[in-house]
Length: 290
Image (cartoon, rainbow, N blue to C red; front, side, top):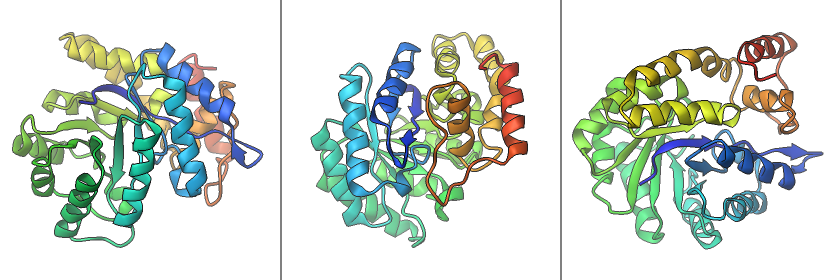
């Protein structure tokens, strides 16, 4: 249902507040450059430091600005099932096309707990839902067997698989078949994951290189595997650069260097070190981004 190059868009701040105009401009930059969908309030959007009102507002702005030109998959996950339901209900009222729901963090539920968490949200909110498995952030890994159980629920339509493991992605694809769409959650494995049967990526790098990420996905889906492979290898260095410090510090700094938003983040995220900022700028120059 949700395929292609989907950006996990940053949330720009200015003087401690959401930069609403800046966010609208970033949405336009994405759509103009071929992005197939937008995820507000994900990890890259600093959802963890947005208050409830701000979280709702970011989703509203992105929905308003896209004007249905591309789907909006709102980040609505929480480590509280009741809270996730509430946020997802708001996203539906705001006009989002789907919800991206991270596995509950910190409380480390069992596989049965994960199943019941997602099943309950799906039953309570009639909105297409994408599971989000990122154990490096959450401390829990949702196993392929659990994904297969959830794939039987009609409005659970996809998974953002961000373990970095092609074995796990392959097991999900083997168990689920066409019951659920698998999206890469890591830019550096998008091409090989698509070779296994994935349908696209929820991308960090697309914030700064939307045309290039979309071009790789489009080449693959059109059958030009050699062009897609070349794009994958060409993007490897910049993909890695997006994680030389904790995401979203590098990508937000990159956008600032491009003049597209401030590099302001909220504590406990801190500005990049001077050494890493210089490394990032040097790599961006290699890609003619600055």
